[in-house]
Length: 402
Image (cartoon, rainbow, N blue to C red; front, side):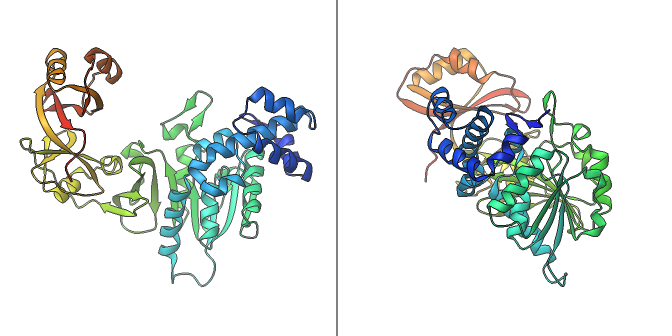
């Protein structure tokens, strides 16, 4: 029986790497965006069903991958699950810079890295480009084949060795660095439980315990109790969206860190606690990486602000502070939550377009949008939240003043 991953077949993928397969892939790429049936019919005039399917699947995956891998996507290979879990290139490059920077001057030669669950290779590509020699393994033969093809396609085959193996068999003590990106998907879909990762969390922790320097990619919502003692936990946001977290051991002392890309801004815990106080002229929404890293107090200190509620991550202040760590909105009204009152106020202000945000509120946003029956030419930002345990609505100008 042929090995498959999603809609990709190992035998057909292997053929895709032959000169004939490359011609089929190039033709499939020219048909990207066309009617799927028409595209398949055209390719079937020259190629068999398996190669046609593999070529069209890869062409479609390459198109989707451009958001993560930029120009490299046009030369790379993917599986559906591999693309979904793979690290965005900018995030992988950030990690590779941190890793190689931490090793500068401490090693006589090329840093050696073992990638214990490499997937399609998004992380080891960045590590190899940063000058590391990478030994990569994956339990799935197709995924390993895709990863190997990616190393070759991007001219990194001399720096990367890929094989089929179980992560539990890796010996991290034989390398300078361990990198691990355990799969976070089961037969029932995506999982947020580290014990359901593949390999499971105890295996990951065993690998980490034997590594002199380790970096483990995890979901941003990882429960704090799963973070190893002495580890640095770093949450990474790209263009305002939290992408992932990484746990570092052997790098430095334990800490919580938030990093913003592409700017490279970083914030670490200082232990400061945010004060609570009345609403000012502005409300600030901290970046998700800072919230995940429990650095709202540090952001509040940057803003000279205060929390509207001790348990909700909205900061208020009187001055228009510009910072990459928070989005700013100018407050026009704060009212207790009431559909009737909110609807009346929006009609009075002729507001017909709203961006709705919420934190600490059980209100269904789409149902609220429908119930408001908006009609008007102006825009506003509506924030549903709690203020000292009272359900409230903060109405803000759509565009903050310069």
